[in-house]
Amino acid sequence: MYSAVHSGALQGVCAYMVSVEVDIARGLPAFLMVGSLSTEVRESRERVTVALKNVGLNLPPCRITVNLSPADRRKEGTAFDLPIAVGMLEAMELVPAGAAEGLLFLGELGLNGELKKARGVLPIVRAAEAEGIRECIVPGANAREGGVIPGIRVRGAENILEIMHFLMARGEERDRVLPRTFVDTESLFAEMERDGGGLQGRPDFAEVTGQETARRAAEIAAAGFHNLLMVGPPGAGKSMIARRIPGILPPLTLEESLEVTSVVSVAGLLEEGEALVTGRPFRSPHHTISQAALIGGSTAPKPGMISLAHRGVLFLDELPEFQRASLDALRQPLEERRVTISRVSGNVTYPSDFMLVCAMNPCPCGYYPDRARCSCTRPQVHRYMGKVSGPILDRIDLCVELAAVDYDSLKSRAKAESSAEIRVRVERARRIQEERFRGTSTRFNGDIEVSAMERYCGLGEEQQRCMERLYGSLQLSARAYHRILRVARTIADLEGAEEIGTAHLMEASYYRPSMEYWGN
Image 1 (spheres, helix red, strand yellow):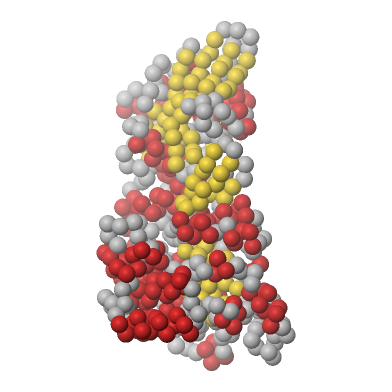
Image 2: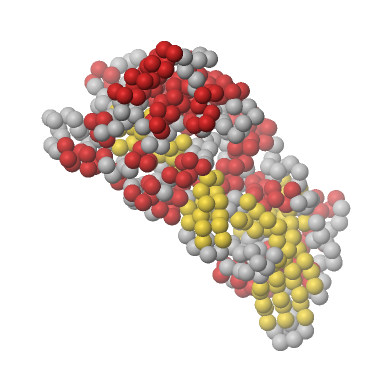
């Protein structure tokens, strides 16, 4: 007997439909699997046969052939266990013929017949809905994840026996066997807004003592989606500020949330029972991280930290301690907002639209230029700072130096601005940018192309003279000149100004990397 069951496979964060074909015929006992399969997919035959045996369904001595079509695309993962098992049940006539028609199956089987959590369910369900499939059967642990897609019925099952009962049922009886799982995304986001727009439980800027310049730089960076570098001694508050930046970014939209959740799901990091990731991601890898873990890769390419930080913040603490090759690999993702990983099996593209926030000490001991505590020579300082390559430094829009917090600031009872207060200004600036760039591919001031500078960052005569003076005195490059204009545009938006003023340009130029450290 022959049967065919729908399933899905991943390629990056995208998915495509897979037809699982099962043929059971007379002959010497054998279980053959074809279709460009990885090792874990081939291992499905052992998991499926033992799972069916342990729920009381012994396979007859026969020749079983399983084909995963299209056969020319590589299949990875363990989620094909369930569709293979369902195809075998239908081919052995243990469930009515055609009972699985129009359904998509996804899930890993335990040896006792239990359905285990699978990765990448959300993008596969989205692809199934686009292909016109009306129902999906997934593990119970993934039901809420798939249930956020309104145009398709998603049902969660706990074991293979529940699915057999479902396939043998008809009409409304199926709803009693496996009820539909539906997640009301509007209520989900409304609940988040009631809880303070996602700020509840997040670190607050009100806890940051002093460091007004760094707080201001963080606000500008968040408003224009600019990259930020903080330089200062240990204990100055660099990490503390960085961890509070997601709290001043606007909340995720539904589409952004689906993008972020898809990446997390593909990586297998979505919490069991979690429907959507509704908070801005914040990823802070240790400086010993490998290039493959940072950018993404391995034999079967998986999302790296830059993709897990999509739509959020990637924080690199102790920046000079990272491998130079790993840092230089960030160049393309920072420019293109995506990363393409090439392997013999093909190319995989992951989104990587993140805000880069970095922190570093000014010298190996961390206390330069305080000569009371720093004994580093100037060559040592330049050598240490030189670990950050020019091309990476050139892609950072704002650089701010932090001094050690003095005692008076530490003991001051004056309450600093909270994240909620700062977010109001950031959201207002973001709305201005949304209106400005409507109908274009540009989203934020930090994304303005050089060809559009005159249109969005035009200067008056006085401002042009100011930039001419700054260009000579700061020895700016062409890229640094355009970076100052982008930052100035964001500063003007925070003030609600239609035109870039001289004060905006002067403040933007202040956030240039110090010539004392880098000589540029």
